[in-house]
Image 1 (cartoon, helix red, strand yellow):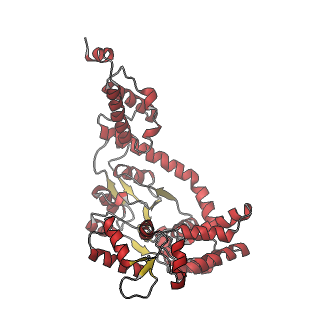
Image 2: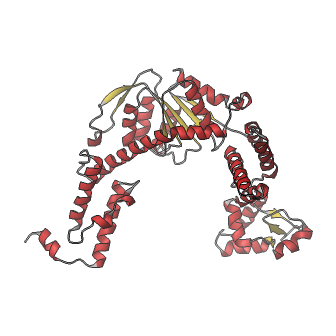
Length: 417
């Protein structure tokens, strides 16, 4: 009697069935990291079959779903192909919604000579790229300050062919992307994975050499890339648009890549952002909302003022007007709800009460937030400087502190809340 027949005759325990399903889920998660949970494992699983037989049935399903090219003999090969297909499908989806994104940005920002002055370094870097005098641009800056919209605007003004990439890109897919979008500007938005691997950085360095045509070669052979040439001349250009690059281990290689292009850090002060917001506001309602936002803004550690703050405020005003609400109260409530991680932690210990420093230190030690009294003293001093905490009494030692800058005469009422 064959092993298969023996397996079919033997009834599995509930625990065995559960274990096999978990193993199959792990296999699916590895092969389909973006959409494994959409596969109907419960319907496909057959308790009369062995784990291997069930797995083979799933592989057959994946072959049907992703074509005959899903033929890797190892899990790594299967995973690589499926990841590439998922990324390809995601790119198609992104292209479909590009017009919607552009329309959204056009409603948020306006063409204005004064506004353009703030972004002239961005415009200069992209114009240089489009004109053929640069192959690479790094544009860094905190989120929601308008840098991406100005990149897109400048690309469109130059009638440039560009391919926008959001999310992450695997090393295996990078070579294919360069081949399929050769001659275009490839715009990476907050894509940092490709800057962490040596193979991808080396490919990027080759792709951004100063020559007009740059030779790219496959770094390794893969069945899923068998339709691609082993080498080709790349004439495209690359933009990296990001907030921060964390986890860069290959610093020397990254620096070598950076020197191949223009590096620009877009920085605005709070006053710059306020000036931009006033320029963006067009009608009386937007101007009134903007002034209220500016007048009532205070930094809490989690609500750094940016242009998205203004857009959200506009939406809150529209929502309030539609449903007969007080827009100022609604907007103020939203602003007050933003709280820094430090304030959140302190609130869990103190609530809304004013307490003495000695009591706060005791709470910090009891909850193991800090390991020693000296650390507690240092942290409290830092929080007073950053205004995560306020001194609310005049004693030199063991004074009262609170999360808000309350007056002495109001302290008793404050503690009763």
